[in-house]
Image (cartoon, rainbow, N blue to C red):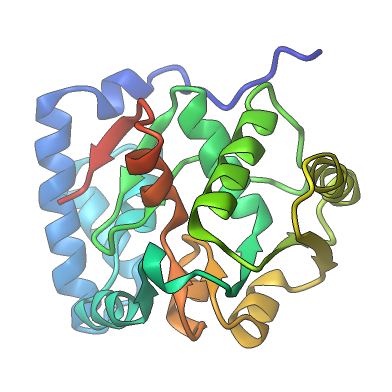
Length: 237
């Protein structure tokens, strides 16, 4: 048993835990919306806004994840499916994206609700995935969703170049066998492109996937609501 989790970084309570910082981040998010909607690049927008509000690196990281243009927000909302749309369907799940957000959420890390209604965290794979104490609980919550939604098949897709991707793929497949779940798991060199092009319904909060897929489902929002999860939530609007 390991003692790893994806909890808060030292200093996160100072950056995200006060009303003063939250007001600053919300104003920054509105400025980002304005600039992105006028075709400023994300990099230029975040530098401009970050300087204006004297944001720290992790605040800028959270801001970038939570921001989108008016056009992006509109498109994402129009392609978003509800739980009632999923019965009997095949879903493709962005494995590391979903697992890491859920692991962070269950670890008590700050989770950021963006202008598009998606939930993101400040963790990342960084070339290697390490299983944490909350991994199994995250998989169990996905299984609960799978049953309640009446999904026909769930396909987990992981980044092949990421170290330990084969190991987590096997953990998912073993869990599926033990619990009699119609799950598959695959490794792809470019999972974002694969999910956008090959899935009828994608499960992810990755911005590029949301902008390029046919349809998507907001699994993190569903689990927070349905399972009444305790979340250190930061709303950026």
